[in-house]
Length: 473
Image (tube, rainbow, N blue to C red; front, side, top):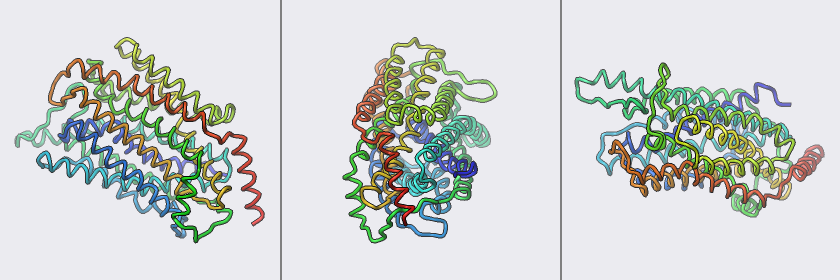
C-alpha cells in the first residue's frame, strides 16, 4: 500500500520536470525569436533537429536505467545525480551570448540539445518509477494522477512566477546599467525581452526544480521485482520485443498526436494574444498579461481534468475516457475558430478545452505501465525503463514536431519580430494555429485509439497472472 508521502514524493518529480517543460513549450519560441534574436524558421528547425535525435536518446537512457544497479535501486539514483545539472543547463540555455547570427544559431543548437539530453537522463528514469512503485493497476492509476496533478501545479507556478521574475530582473538590472546604454525596453503589454531578465528568471525556477527532484528521490521506493529477471537479455532482444509490441505502437502514435495538439496551441498563444486579440494589458500587482492569465486558466482546468481522470476511467475504462476527451477537444477547438474576439469567449474556450485535455496525460502514463505488464507476460522480461523511455520519446517527438511546425507556420505566414504590427495573413495564420490545426491533431488521436487492444478487463487478467507468478517464486 502506497503512503501519502510516497505519492507526494513521486508527484514532486513531474512538478520539477513540468516547471521547465512549460518554459520550453510556451515560451522558448518567443525567447528565440524576440530575445535571443534568430528567425522563427531557424528556431523551428532547431527544435526539430535537437528533439528528434534526443527522442531516440531516450531509448538509450531507458536501456541504461534497466541495467543500473545501486543500493537506491535502478531508477531513483538518476534523480539525485542529475537534479543540479538539470537546473544549470536551463540557465545556460536561456543565456544570450554576444555572438553574430551564425554564432547564436550554433550556441542555440548546442545548449538546447544538451538541455534535452539532461532532461532525458532524469525524466526517463523518473517515469520508469511508476512501473516499480506498485504492481497494482489501480494504485498506478492513482500515482499517475498524482504525477499529473503535481505537474500541472508546477506549470501553474511557472506561469505565475516567470513573467514577474523576468520583468522584475529586467527592470532591476537594466536600470542599473542604464548609464552604460544597455537597456532593453520592457513592453507595457507583454513579457520583457531583456536577456538578463530571462537568464535570472529561469535560474530561480531551476533552483526550485533541483530541490523538488531531491525530495522525489528521498520519498520514493522501488518495490516491484520482475517475475523472471534475465540479466543476460541483450539490448537487441529488448528492442525486438518492444518493436513487436502492437499496443505500444498504437499508444506512441496516439500520444504523439495528442502532444502535437498541445504543442501547437501552446506555442502560438503569446503571438495570438499580442497580434490577433490585440489589446493585451497587464494585471495590476501581479504583472501578468492576458496570455499569462490564459495559460493559468488552462493549467487550472487541466488540473481538474487530472483529478477527475481516475474516477472517470474507473467507471468508463481508460480507452473510452481517452477517446471521449479527444473527441470533445476536437469539437471545442473547432468551435474556438468561430467565437467572437473577446476575452470572455477566449477564456471560456480555454477552460473547456483544457479540462478535456487534462484527462489524457495521466491516462497515457498509466496505459504505458499496463504495456510494461503486457510485455513482461509475453517475453518474461520487465523492461520498465525501455518502455517508459519510449513514452518520453513520443512526448518529445510530439513537442518536437509541434514546436517545429509552429515556427515553420509562423515563417510561412510571414511573421516578423521586428514589426510592431503583423500583417493580416500572419494574424489569420495565428488564429488557425490555435484552433483548427489542434482540432485535426485531436481527431488523429481519437482514430488511433480505436485500434488499441488492451481493455481494462484484459489488463486485469494480465495483472492477476503476473501476481500469481510472483507468489510462486
